[in-house]
Amino acid sequence: MSSTASAPLSVAAPEAALPAISFVPLAAVRPSLDLPPVLLPRVENHSSSAGNPIEALPGVPAVVITACSKAIEIAAAPFGAISVRVTSAGFLHQLSPDSLSAPIDVSIDYPWKGDLQTQRAPITCQLNATGDVIGLT
Image (cartoon, rainbow, N blue to C red; front, side):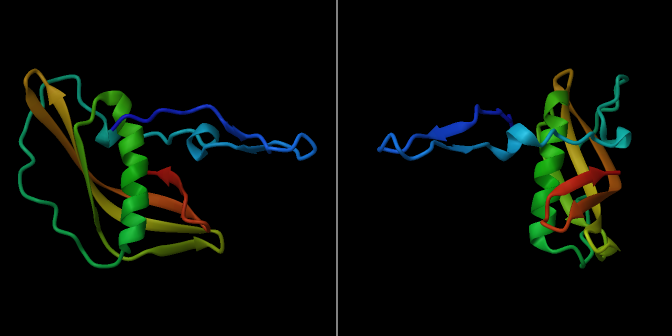
């Protein structure tokens, strides 16, 4: 679950008269989002197993779940997250012509003194009109 930002790619044209084309990886221009505090690992020992599986409610499309899950994985990685599970918690809400809100249930496992610490919470994943995650609350 490591995210490595690579340097921008340059493709030089074979003929000197043509300009070079640069491609900037998306991760290089978009900073990771903050993880909601309720999903951060606790300092005190709150080790637990994953417990009951999160029961998904219909409503949030799989493509949105995938986008939100990837954003959460990136945000949780600096804290040592081992696994992230995300399920739909209801229907999408149109916040504006350019943004959507997706209710999701999240469960993140962190290592804790040879055991697991699981943080679970319902949160909201906000997306812009192009499907990029712009907020986790």
